Amino acid sequence: MAGLPERLSRTEQVFEAIVDDICTGRLTTGVPLRQEQLAERFNVSRQPIQQALLLLRNQGLVREFGRRGLEVTPLERDFVSHLYELRAILDGQAARLAADRRDDDWLRHATRVVVSGRQAFDDRAFAQMVRNDVEFHRAVVEAAGNPLLTESAGVMWRNVQRVMGEVLLQGGGPAWVWEDHAAILDAVRDRDGDAAEALARRHAEHGEQLILETMPAPARADEASAE
Image 1 (tube, helix red, strand yellow):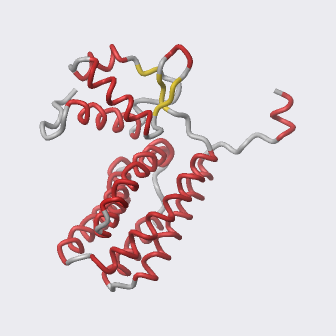
Image 2 (cartoon, one colour; image 1 turned 90 degrees about the vertical axis):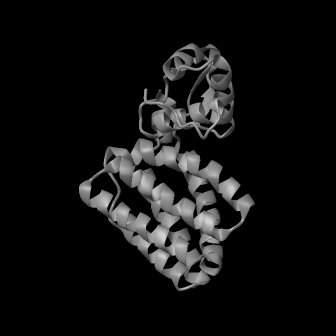
Image 3 (cartoon, helix red, strand yellow; image 1 turned 180 degrees about the vertical axis):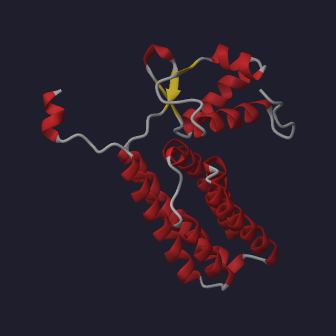
């Protein structure tokens, strides 16, 4: 494995590396997370592994699973719906605040992210598409200037990134994703808080629909009772 960033603690380095593995599909549901194997892979002691796994469990990315320890939490339709319901609220409020508080430096950065996302879409670079999507929405949250909103959204976006990584990387995202980003950016640029919030909420609702359409349909009651 490539060297881990020096700016982070060992626990943070391991945490970020495992999250990346989950979001890119290298760690999948049902595979047990063995502390010994992770410690050997990342060339660290078991202590930062234990601490990183605790953080992952607290954020819902991994779960306890019998005597096997921990595994990546399976994606369920109800979880996705609840996640995107929260996302609509947080992203909408962040966009409203960003429209009032953004500055020119932020506009330049957000514009670069949107352009990069469109290019990744044209190139069918799926992993880059996911990174640009997450970066754009995190930038909007940061522009809101509310540290508690930023902290809450950070946990949420760990799970959003995981959903996108597991589902969207199978087939990429539609063009409207990047068109929505451009529309939100325009509203923030124009300091139109009402429009920015409405567009961000609609974008989250579209995202939920897209994710659910790519997931297996729930079993009918008669099918479930026959099993």
